[in-house]
Amino acid sequence: MKLQDLLLVAIFAIFIIQVQATGHYNDYEDWEHDYPDNCEELFKTKSCNKCQNLMWDHFENPGQCATAFNVGKKILKAIKDSNETPKPYDLKFFEKGVTNYCHQGFHCEQSEVEKIYKKIEKVCSKELSVKFDWSAHPKTFKDKTAYAAYGTLLVYYTGIPSRKAICLKNDNGDLCSIKFTKKFVKWMKKVTKSDPDAIVSHDYQFVIKGNGKKIRIPKSFQCDPCWRKMAKIFIDYIEKHKLKKSIEDNLWGSEHHHDDLPH
Image (cartoon, rainbow, N blue to C red):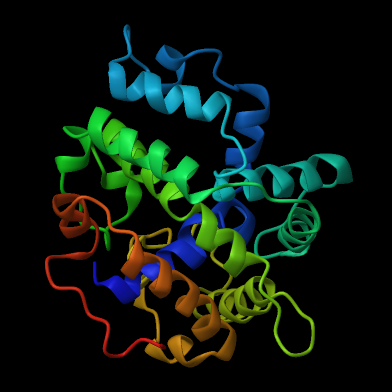
């Protein structure tokens, strides 16, 4: 996964949860009725290890630094409060949730979030040594704990830049995250013929249809003014705050490409 792809992952796949973007609302209903009571239930194991327990602690008490998690909660609340049945590709609840999130305060210091993600790096070092093909469908990922470890790490690592990017406004006063997502989802709906089971690969290279067919995402999306403004926020942050090198390599490869990104 190249660095520029991580930016798209952070902007889209991480905090723009696919439940809201493409309508996998069965997942939402499952969480509503089968919310896990403990770590063992969440990870489907008899006894959680240290990494799983750490992730469970953050799951129960995410704090303000967990931007992706908190945006997701706002969106799910919008769904619940509406008493409506959401429809695939309907971004009404996504838009309301993001807007409500950006209207609330945000208190997360770099020292605080750094302490959190460095602890995840240490406690989950084994899990974060697992390599994934980020262009594959997540359902093919066999090591669910390792997959969750990467997700938890990135939620906190991108917490501060994600907040800035999500709530960034364009010259017209519109939220860039909403404007860009509408543009992308409109394209996705068209090319998949409104496939309700389509998802975006974590490297943002493909849309994967329910039948497994991959559709490459055009690079032209990277020319979108809102995307470029949001991307710069992540670029500046990632260049200043480094993860452990082996983890960076597992996430976006050993060669980091910056030349074609906005500065």
